Image (cartoon, rainbow, N blue to C red; front, side):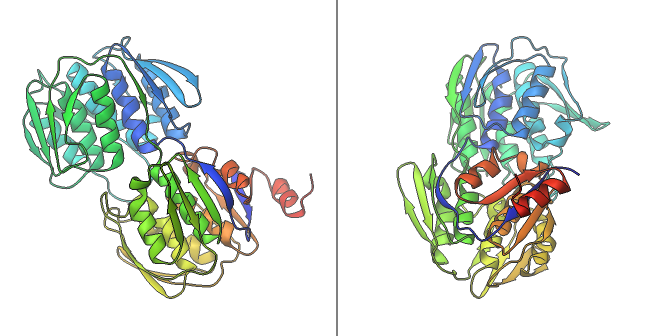
Length: 432
């Protein structure tokens, strides 16, 4: 029996929770750290599976990785060489492997990296990455599950992204930081982690302007140097606990956040009747009654984030009335619906739209996490349900949440990590 969560629902989550560093910023920042032969000290790094796998892969190609603690690491790319290949069974399982293409291509004008994996939430092609690399002068080959990018030199140019892509924006930005001349990238992603990566590169000596707007302008530099940097807080972890407060009719103060990054989530929670109070670096979410329905469409930042869609759907499935959730980013985001239906949710999916008819209460069931964010959503559903819920395939959750069950326990949630039927029985009978 693999590790599972067992949850006894019915307790409102109450108290304070401290949010860690943003996984989606940490992964490209860690990859970008190898672009210098100096040293980069990176703080507020989340200690989650994806970051640990990436750090292992970087060590495997010659980077020096010195962990000063769970959340601080010193990285140097001085021990690497241009002929390194990035490929092992672990790196193929995470989406972020592709950030090493932009980093190594910029530094060495050559990169050979295993094609990425990650959660099966829909098609995530890398055509925009390839388009950007080619525009800078790179030659691209894909064979045997590997992508190889080579260039005699990278030359700055004008690039227009056909679709808004976070990964492509960051990847091309990294390569262009060490190209000759000026690069302009239009129709770029504006997510907070795009801005964070640009700020990190600038702290290393890059010259990047416009991150967070529709146009990024980059003046190429010859090399990058030492830096010290702290990663931004994780808006999705914060949003997950915001929706947990609503679903369990709780009262949670979520600390170490940037409230502006949470505006789309806060606005929807207020719209359905939750109380959301903002402070300098915290938000408090309170829900004392059953809330109302709404309509949501996931969009690139500053729109409602696709990574918050399953968690929000759990809250809406317990609200009054009928809500409509439209998914415009990933076509397979609704794989959690069958699991949530086992708990009594009333959700109909038609293509990329879910029609959610609110119910008063979920009942506990045995469910399985189909991906990272859906896994977190099913845990929230279990916390709000009557009776016991077991959530399996929780390895997905470890990809993006650090100490998830411990943070929930500190808020009064009745959840335990188990790996045997005996432990499940003990939990239910409370035999120590």
